[in-house]
Every structure is written in C-alpha cells, then in structure tokens.
Length: 167
Ligand code: CO
Image 1 (tube, rainbow, N blue to C red):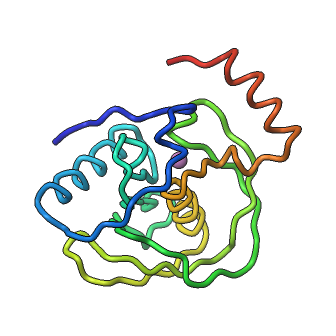
Image 2 (tube, rainbow, N blue to C red; image 1 turned 90 degrees about the horizontal axis):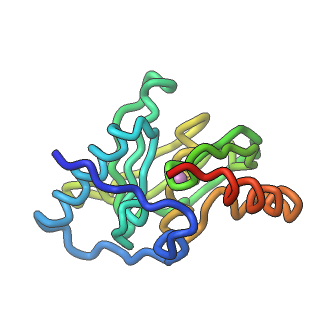
C-alpha cells in the first residue's frame, strides 16, 4: 500500500492532457492500486492519475458511501459517449483543497473505458457517480472544476485561494 502525494493547484501537471494507456503491465497496475489507496487515504470519491503526478489516462471513482449500489471503479482511457440533462451541485477537488463551488454538469452520462485487466467496460452514471466521472475525466484533459467558474467567480477564487491557502 502506498499513499502518494496529491498535486495541488497551480501545479502545471494538472493542466496537461494525459496520455492514453496502450499497455497494461504490472507497473500500471501498481500505479492504479496506489491511486486507489491515495484516494481512500484522502477520503476522496475520485482521483485521476495526473493528481499524483502521472500524466496517464487513469481514473478511480468510489461513491459507494452516498450511492449505495456503486462500488470502486477503475477506468482507463475513459470517454463519455452519451450525456443527458444538466444539474448544478456543489463540487470540490483534492487538488484544490478547501474550496467548493456550484458547478453545472450533465445529469447522466455513459462512459466507455477499459478496466484494470484490460477488458472493455461501459457504465452509466447518474447522481454523484455522473458528477464524479465527469470531474475525473476533466482531469485527464487538463481541466479543473475551477475552470468552469464564470470570470467574476474565478477572480474571487484567485484572490481568496492564494491568500488563504493552507498546505
Ligand atoms: Co479533482
């Protein structure tokens, strides 16, 4: 078990487009396991590889505390293939500690990916699962939830976040 250090804004790796996984080897599986451990250690509901300094298209999501039917999901090269509806809800991120904001997301998404063993999977997400999937996939494209703030909110964020950051 390994608890990795989580990169925080404005670390440059969070802005990068992560690379596709083409070969699932032991090294990748160890990285996946460490990302899972790191997510649980930080009490997060999701984590993406760039957040631990690895610019690779891997996300892990576990919303089972809130969405009882769900369990841990490990998704490589995830892609949203269908979306529906819109919903606004409060959101935060382990890479932007102590800041939360109301963010609009699709209400429902279908995601195609491959799992830890390299098998193709397709999942449907609603509620928190839908939100977590979109948030984590954004990380793979160098996007943070604060990038979705309107200019006035973003300005306020930059002002207060830099002043109050506790690391
Ligand atoms: Co995040």
